[in-house]
Image (cartoon, rainbow, N blue to C red; front, side):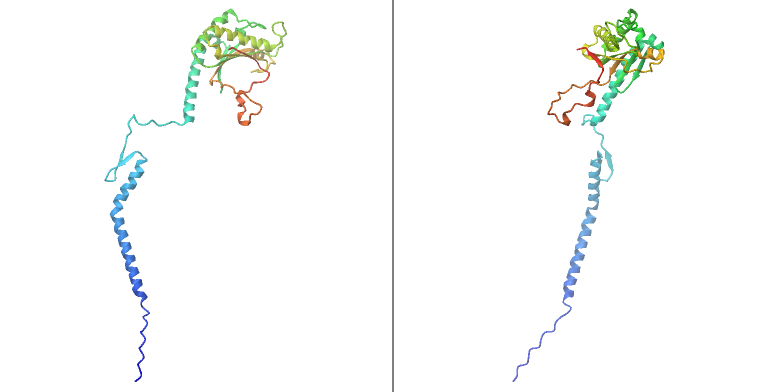
Length: 277
């Protein structure tokens, strides 16, 4: 008797639906868990976020989500000021102090100020007291008038109480001079400035703060065409410097561009300078 052939199993084409249903079940369970976690920690997360933000604002967040401002005690670390602002404040205080010195000088020279013989100018370098030479010297001479000595001594007393560097400048008009003592206006202006410098030093102003410069006729403030302009140019100026000059550095032959001295340290050509040390 012939064996009956075993019937082949019927192939199930819908088997993938089992795996797909399991995948959807797991995915649904994952989202349920994530939603449950986020719902539980939402309040804690908000408190944590507000605490971090308020920490940078010096605030404390209470459990109810309300912020409490924290006032730092005076013993805490002081707020640091930027270097540029610190320098600006120091310069401002120094300039105010310098202006007070100039005001004191104006007070002791008040009669001469009223006559128009003394003027005060403020520049970036400092404060300049400009004195007409007619009240200080005779024409072509470098010896102080006896009447002006007391006025200059009063100015010296004011300057002696300060610590600013002082530059005394002598100026002339363009009328040439040629004497045995003063071959040109260079010598006349330099000696006049030095005469005032010596009076200041003798009156108590530190010699290390004093500098005398003779400019001759090279720096007029008015045209020399008229007598009024020439009289205006014949003057002695007292410069109260607002900045202490820096010490110079030696320049060597092998020095690079970075080692070159600053432009402010250059010596003006043609100026006859006499410094007291």
